[in-house]
Amino acid sequence: MTARGEHRTDRRTFAVVLAAGAGTRFAGPGHKLDAEVGGRAVLTRAVTAAVEAAIGPVVVVTAGQVRASLPAGVVHVVNGRWAEGQATSQQA
Image (cartoon, rainbow, N blue to C red; front, side):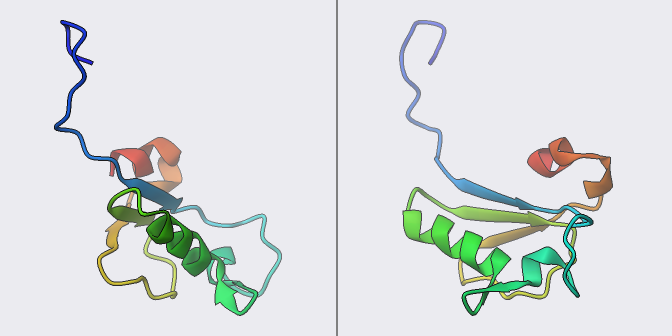
């Protein structure tokens, strides 16, 4: 809302998939985002759900560690400061 109580219409709604963690609690052989569930990587499942929700553009923030391919049109942001906390992924 603006200072006069009007709703702004120039903002866009988009989905952000925060996927920049180290996955240290995961006990599998690789990174948890690459682990398959139902024949698809965890990251692929999350991104597909965000795309299919059709709420707007989809942005995926990673530490550059995942191997899963992302669908066309998805923006991939690598957060080089991921180890400093989740807020750095949101800022990225």
